[in-house]
Image (tube, rainbow, N blue to C red; front, side):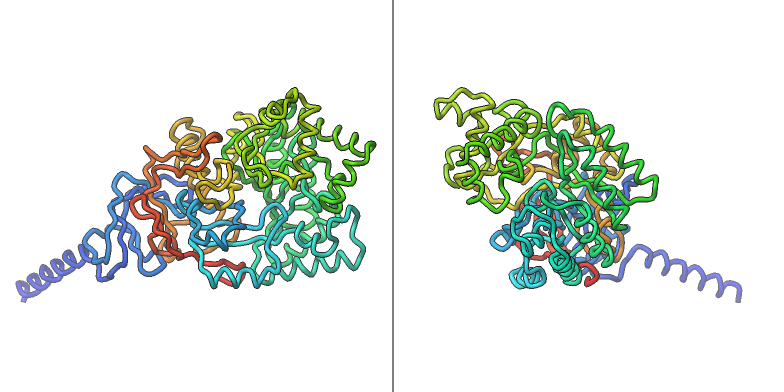
Length: 528
């Protein structure tokens, strides 16, 4: 009897040992031997990841498991797909595969920034679902958009009915799936609003669980007051606030990120949810009209043309432009303003305001530069790169524990204008330049700023971390070679080192090759 029991026990142990070395699941894909950074900011570990359908089914030791495909990841970092918290994805209807974003490892982008969003909101999202998208997309509802809907470009405060209509449109956008409200208080018509209007509209977003992101009213000499305004909006509207593409513009303000970050810390210590997003460059990108006083553009470009043809008004407008060329985005040097997209004179693309002055036989001084800015706006405007930031501020802001990585980039294809290199290189640049080369961030912290922190901020419960049950948005990159190649001189260059990108379990980048699939989802808050 004892011998029989002993033999049975040995047989049972043998069955258990054999069983422990097998997995009865059949995976669609198994990622083997990767160094897993789970998105939490914790140290990495070595493991395999099994994908079934659009989900991470298991993380462990899966080398003996059955799968339709195995991807060898030895020597590669395996991370959640990157979440871009500030993206200009307006061209997505024609660039639906989203190559310039996906090739960076981005699997989710938040659109509708700086106060501008699609409208009508819900039908636009429906259209995106119909055509399909190469990455997941989420949207904010824009303050400037609804203000323009209701008040056009009027430089005044809303009456009660207008404010009620704007509030209704914000609520409508939230109920149709927006993740929050964005403002562009530097741009018209948002620049015409006062704080009480913004608080009222932000409350409408807050009541639906939304966040608030803001292109601050000023990022140069008025930066401190602008940060204070954003913090006040957070307090009065009871809403999480993101200082979007936070930066310090203009040489007189360089170093002031010490104070702005202290303001963020103080507000957080008081219980307010204040965060930051940032792109890793010392140059910004926006319309040349940012150099023009907002009041001069009220009513649209026809009104602007009328004003600059009125001598007294032109003098005031020119004085304002000169001030901005010296102290703000002009950086005190016409060579710091670089043309990016100029529909009426494409040969200017890539050249500077100084180059244009010389081409016209003008002395490249601030006075002539201001006249050229007026000429550009009269002709229909232009997009420009403004080299007016300091590296020390960039790194200081990047290191703040509540700063997230965001591109502020637009979807693009090679040869289209002369874009900011961030459109191609933001996320690889952080991983290559600021992690590997400069040691500004650890790799696990950088990944957290690209994944777990943005996901938590947006309230995404099924993305942003490598955990069983999460959606299989995953990026594999080589931490020794990942780098951005796009430069200010030659921006149309994809990055190196992003080897595989999985979007909802489908392979979007395969051993460095972009596959052009549309596996993304249109994400709607409270409707996932």
